[in-house]
Length: 338
Ligand code: P6P
Image 1 (cartoon, rainbow, N blue to C red):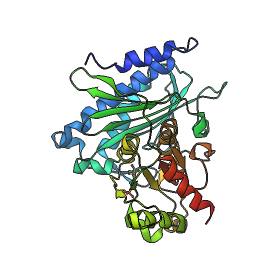
Image 2 (image 1 turned 90 degrees about the vertical axis):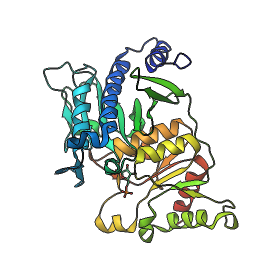
Image 3 (image 1 turned 180 degrees about the vertical axis):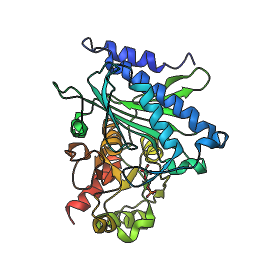
């Protein structure tokens, strides 16, 4: 591993470049990574940890069936971070309300939102899942945070990342100075810098969308996908490939690696149901938007920059169109002209 820089060395050198940094974010990230390693171990057990597989028989605030691993991962994340003294509180997809750090622990100034096991419907079929997290600062003067303290626009994030439990376990992270990817060495338990300074290709020929909802799509989305399907004889003059893992972490990681556009757009069915999208703003769309933008991509709802949305509730949902700059801007243009 000597040819690779460890995460700790990388983040320590980054910190040294900021003489006024307190080291608190580094301290928090080390505990977040500890949680991710434990979740990686748990998911890696697969059917061998059968008692952790399957549904928990409960629903989360979204009305989604919770997997046992959703709840276990959530508990692991809380246990690994709440004591560290850098956090004031946390909010999770798996909890109806935010959780202030218990009084028995020192409270810091950071807030964290997270999806402890994104894509967990893939667990039982052994397909990649991941943890997504976003770190905000608690407003000056607030003591014990409540739900309202988490309602900050994505541009306020100080850090965002995900851990992908795939063929290998990878951490992808931004603190606002580009995006870097690290691979976990199961032997040493350390993450090593394997994808420095990730940049998303501006052009792509690969789209990711759940096409089973195509009958509900709004005209701009339908127009774009039809043009992709028309291939080189069509207006885009090239053939496109389609991928859909149904795990946002895996689908976004792919476009970070080789370009692409990921879409979970608004559709007529959502409008009829009175919902504002599928993906959650605070712990899916915002952290992934921060990463995508820092890697040179674009992240939009179709009509506005995701990171400029002022959240109104903890589990708010938004439409998501993100990835390669040229393609996302094309789709945004179709929305503007519709
Ligand atoms: P569908 C996983 O449940 C998730 O929140 C994202 O990770 C993923 O992109 C999306 O939902 C998949 O949704 O409707 O295709 O199952």
